Length: 295
Length: 323
Image (tube, rainbow over all chains, first blue to last red; front, side):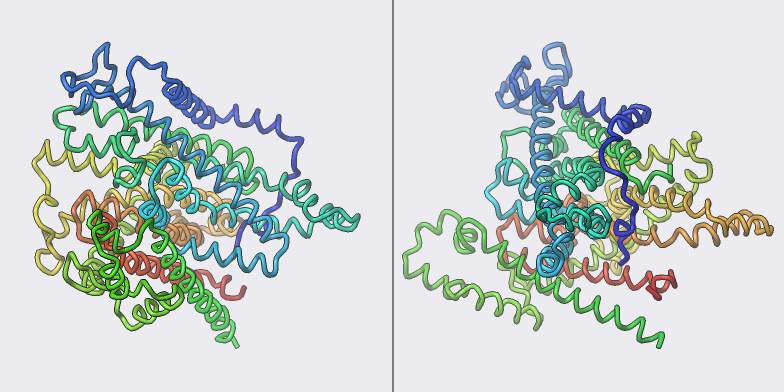
């Protein structure tokens, strides 16, 4: 397969940050995405800080399945728990897992991708081999199998999702690094006797940052979907912790009598993914040299 | 001469795919050995604690897990190659038989979903591209964004509860009908699941079509064709879409992974006895022999599809043949 990233012209690094931020601000969908994501992040922070009037786990059986009211904005679930508090806690949980997963995948994948592209030969053969093996699994299936063998908590779920996205980061960074190796200023740096590590950190990494940043936002939206799907299948963070997927699973049988139990987590999981996708698209238009002419 | 050119990369691709499959086998094997406890504890649960050391040793030797790991791996691999994929004690059948029952269900679901996705995605992408940034483009893009952002399980759950509650229509409530038993009921049962999966795959196909069509349309040969009077419809289909097919095909091939993962979710919700449900049941019932072999079969299917997509390029795009 021909790799389009391999021949892509690379943008000059740095110096254009201000220009890029301006361009992002002028992209309405990028701004909309940023606003949605920030609003949900604020909700997650408020929930994590424990300043909401209700707690996500405390049960109150007499108050079960109540409709939305001043006391319970999104109503209560079958155990009398506040749906708003649970949804907020679930968003917080989802963000924690997704951000951790993507952070792990970014660091491991980018470092491996740079190493594979820069050293070539044996490291490249090993890293590319592992990448191909991981790519041979459908993403959700890989996360699912890993989650099934791990003792589940938020971190192991994040690690399982991270492993799925490591090969993507390897693949998007390796190609550009291969072509960067032949660029004059990298050759000049090699000729002046700078160490390989220094060259990779100073000349290679900054140049592939735009690609990595775009990949991070897109991967975040997939990670949120994966985490929600895992918990819907009963392979996410164990109960009673709130999770968007497991809330929707519970609401499945209640939706006729208490539609609010489905509405809140359903709307917020879609809002979160839409926000991340819009932000990712906006960033890609600004940062990715390949998409510049297709707007 | 030309044949050699086609063959050499082919052989190379095949060898690489075999190597990948071996790696996949090692990975699956190691992953399932990483389970806290072992198959005996997993199978018996808390009762495993009541086993005497002799009983435990007997079980270990029965399952073969007292042997060194490499020996276990190669005996498993040897069994796989000869068609022995293990035995499911719950279903009282071999995993091979289970898979022979479940694989056609998932294949049907996959084919229907991809057809629906192409039927929705390509025209929508062309419509969006026909007038960029117009209202119709924005609507097309909004549908694409929805397809990317609505989780399959949410869409499936909502569709199922709305249709079942408001219209009393739930073909999946009764037992699964094979295509050969009751084609009409089977297609009804497949409609919602393949719509859900197809909608998810239509989104990236729509986006790729839009980008590719805009890209091709700006090229010189399209202007030349228009100048020499090619009718607009023929220009759109033969000149523009024909050349945009390679990226669309790539994207469709890539979606197969989403499809196989999504099948786990959708088959579970709509009670379809496919291969995704087989994995999930295996996980829930802690039948690791079933999980191990089924995951391997799915990965094999995925590798084969990727290989076929690669080969299809050579048919569609003569330029790849020369490269």
